[in-house]
Image (cartoon, rainbow, N blue to C red; front, side, top):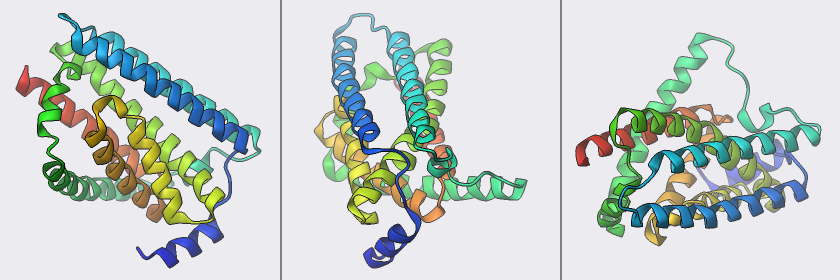
Length: 239
């Protein structure tokens, strides 16, 4: 996707979804949660019997509360929530199309992340994050609920809302995608600097998908699926 095409599309199609004060508040809240999440993760990693259920539940609650805050800001601005989600599905064919797009994206993005992960040597870091992975049926069930929540809320917040706001601010789609991806990576700082880079690239891929499709729905599907699959498989294999 060429930069000139992205810029032209952004100037024609994108407008702010909410006011600048609301966006600043969203970023401040994200920053605060990132710091608190690092504290929670450190406590979890150092515990003899880590309370993963508490960590999952707090994260799940935060994401839905922030999602609600974003929706409230969009509506207060006089815009429809569809401005950050994309058009509704009008037929089964459209649903199946987005599932197909999500599946194709998942295959391509997984390949890119595997290559980049090897270059960044994040395999050892991944093993250090084992304390987050679910144990047993109850934790796996909650992990899946958290993964679905992440797919819905994070795509709506980072790709639907923040990406649009950054594009409107910079008048540049490429920069808007990169800024949103950087915020997405930074929000996962508790996983370490190299993982922030990897997750930031992952966010950029989702950003390109959302811009190309004009909707965050395929990204929601792929995001929820990948988080669910990776966490459950890793949890079952390693524990």
